[in-house]
Image 1 (cartoon, rainbow, N blue to C red):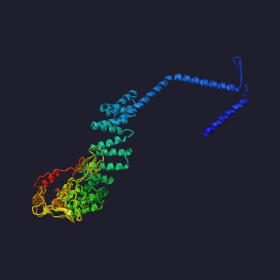
Image 2: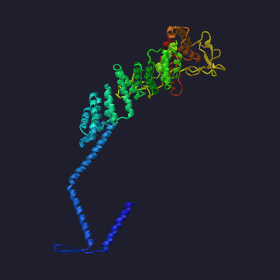
Image 3: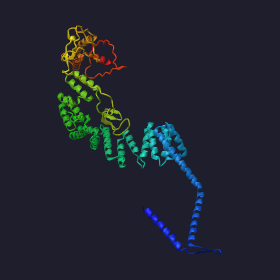
Image 4: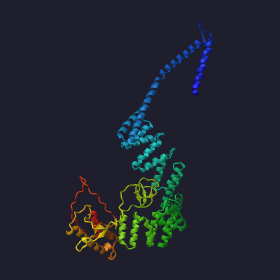
Length: 588
């Protein structure tokens, strides 16, 4: 709106000036070399304006002619730049998509058009890497490292190539050179820190960490955590040579990161050995509240080496009460209770986790049952421990260690180890675990002795309805047998003979010292479970002890949807040994 008003004002001024000049034409006389020209002011002004326009046009034409070579050169540079930009763009896209052939083509075009451009050098290096030309990539990165504008990028490329060929000394040199640059790249500072940690130079690593903090490459929280890890590693290296220095370093690390288990456990152990048990207890308790761990429980229980097992149990119970209620607390109490032979305390501690136990829980339950004399239950828990899910362990980059390490042996990362399940976050299929046999409701089925219970029969009870016997018992495969005549005598099948022989073998195995622990008057729990399951389910194949459930695949319905008849085959004679029978069931 303002521009319109200004335009109207200018237009009005010009119109006013034209009208004013028209009302006052005036006269102008020009005498030059004896000639006189008389005209009006308006004509003179028009002539001057035309002369000015002609001069401007003439000057523009002359200037264009004089600057034609420069203009043509600039236009050619522009076209060359556009083509080079297109070649670099298409080449980088090809490199990103993994198309080595196309990347090589556009790289050659970009090198021909703009060989010294930074993006051309970058494209050349990445194309060489994509095509497997390591020497060409190194040469290109070396050219970039010699230029001021691409120096850090070239050093980064040289660092990566040195790591790929396992030349750690050269990689460290490139990282340190890049870390001294004014731009302070984060990758160089982190690489120098990790290289010094891998070499065991904990003092140099701490110095580099301070430089990273001063350069604002890491925040204060990350600095405290990494410094605690480095101090713990340095304390571990000095634990045998300079215990006083190691104790001071471990205490500082525990203060910087109270949830760092190795620092607290080491500080507690060193303080306990030095006689400062109260400080050691406070350090371990503070770490336990933040992160319960078996190493903390073990260090806390050994604060007084001369204590009895019951005193250690009391101390562990005190520690467990000061932290969260979880599996680690229960396992620590159970371990101490087993050492003190307080079996009721151990069983109560493990009871909430016995439904779906991990390996440590199952192993402790097996040890508890063995200590109480029930070897059958102990073997059952040991079998469950073999198939149970793994317990948490020190894990870093899919590497599992039996003790904590400050850096990962796979990637070299600092503070990479975590106390977690090594298989966490992955689908590993169903876990084989204990499953109780289903019980038949009394209102639906009742166990009655049929003809097989008579002398000479199989001795296996038949499951019949409670009101009246069912004329068509169901076999294992779910098909009904044809109806029998009332006066037809039931023949003895090979299954009946097999069942009778198997029961006799079980009686012998219960009297065997290997299966029953040398006592014939006590029946093992696993064998009892198998016998009870056979007495409650009619005409079924004997199963193994209830440790590993057997899952059978469904039958093929066939092409017409009908279930094909399976040929009856005579079952092989059962082995004489109890464990051999279990293995034979898995082979069938």
